[in-house]
Length: 337
Image 1 (tube, helix red, strand yellow):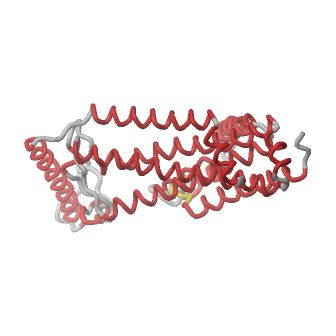
Image 2: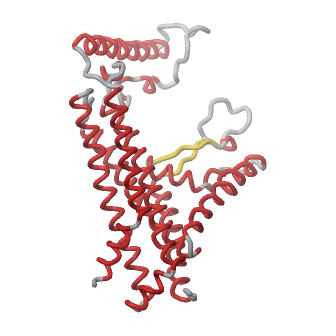
């Protein structure tokens, strides 16, 4: 029998994998049902009122920009109750804003696909990341703990080949499930937006941004799958992966973060893996370091620093590669009995 086919059958037959797929289906059904219950097609009167509110909001923004220009030109004196007037009126220029108010912003109890799609996608990615990590850890952990790997090596000698086939099969099936689940998930909510809500503005920028999040999310799902597999291989048990994550979260993300804050360590956020995860998924995370602004400097943005998706990806790849490489080396050399 082909080794890849055997591993596919072993993985799909695992009860834990089937349970996780069932939980994914249940979460999908609950989210869909809740959305359908809480949404309706807006009436003509509702759309008209929402369009009027959006037009009023745009008019207010334009009035604020005009007032800023007149204040900076000296036509209007600045008083204490004048409110905030930026030094550069381009900050409040509606023409330069990323997004102006639209009618769908003012619809109540109406599902707007373009507004909700990003949050729905983040929810799906989070579940798939958890799914990949747990399945990856349990897949190899159970085999190592039960002696299944030893039996497999009797049939197909070659430790690296066997472990590599297991990892490749795992990544391939998780990727296929992630793509299928994403298409079904977003497709269903797109239909809901067309039939029981409103689609909302869906231009090229919207689809491009959603596609970028999806692509980064899929990479994160696969990395978490490989990481769970690697940690469980090193620890020879599923619980090793769960324990490693729990220990890191408690000792470093919570404990060390608190200590670094007490010690007032500069740019401590750069030492937290969770920030790199967030930066990779969102594309960019900004943080504040007050050391960039000397005392008495007034308004200052010199303390802002960011983690972008590029460095975040390098950190995630380095961590996953180090763990996986160590797992293959340990698996090749140690006694499996």
